[in-house]
Image 1 (cartoon, one colour):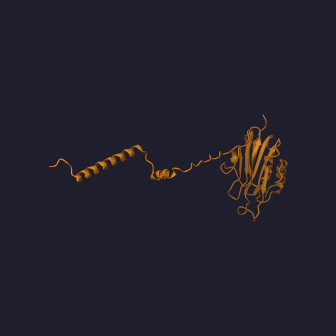
Image 2: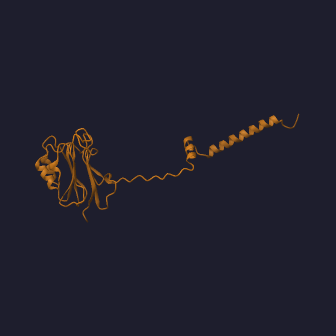
Image 3: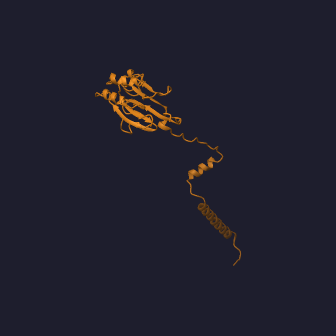
Amino acid sequence: MSCCLSPGTFKVLFLFFASLCAWYSGYLLAELIPEVPLSNAVYSVQSIGAKPVIKAPAPKRQKCDHWTPCPQNTYAYRLLSGGGRDKYAKICFEDELLIGEKTGNVARGINIAIVNYVTGKVIETRFFDMYEGDNSGPMTKFIQSAPQKSLLFMVTHDDGSSRLKDDAKNAIEALGSKEIRNMKFRSSWVFLASKGFELPAGIQREKINHSDSKKNRYSGWPAEIQIEGCIPREPS
C-alpha cells in the first residue's frame, strides 16, 4: 500500500477542512456581531459617505400655544370664538383652559371667565344662552359682580346676539368694548376687559367676524376668530 495520498483524496480532505474552517469562522462572527435586520445593514452600507443630516430640535411648547413665550412678569392669554356647530369656544389663561370643550363648561351664547388680576386665579366662569331664554339680565349682573382688579374674558359660541339686551350691552360697553353694539346673528366675537385698572394700550382686546353667506367658512357660521397676548402683572 502506498504511504502517500492520491491527488484526488488530498483535494477532498482540503475541501473538507476548508469548509470546516469557513463554517467555524462564520459561527464566531455570528456570536461576536449583534443581530440587526438586513434592511438596517443595507441602509448602513448605503449611508457610508453620505452627508450627515442635522435636525433642528422640536420647538418648545409655549403657554396657551403661543408661538413665542411671554416675557417674565406677564400673563399669557388666548381667546378663541366658536366656529360652526362643533368647534367650541376656548379661553386659555396662563396655560390653563378656563372655558372649553375639555372642561365641559362651554355652551351656545356668550361664555365669560373672571380672573383675579393680582393673583392670576380664576374667580368664576359662566355661559349665557343668547338664543333661548331670558339670560341678558343675569349676564349683566354677573359682569357687574366682578370685583375690582379683575380680568374679564368673553367669547361667543354659535349665536351671542339674538336675546342680548341693552342692559348687557351697556355693561360690556362700559368695560371698553367697541363692537358689542355691532353684534349680529352668529357673529364670532372675543373680548378682553379689565375692571379697576387700565390695560396697556398695545394689548389686543377685541375682535369680531360677522356671518356672511358668501364668505362663511362653515355652513351658516363665520370662521372662528382669536386674540392672544401677554398682560403685564401688577408691580409688586
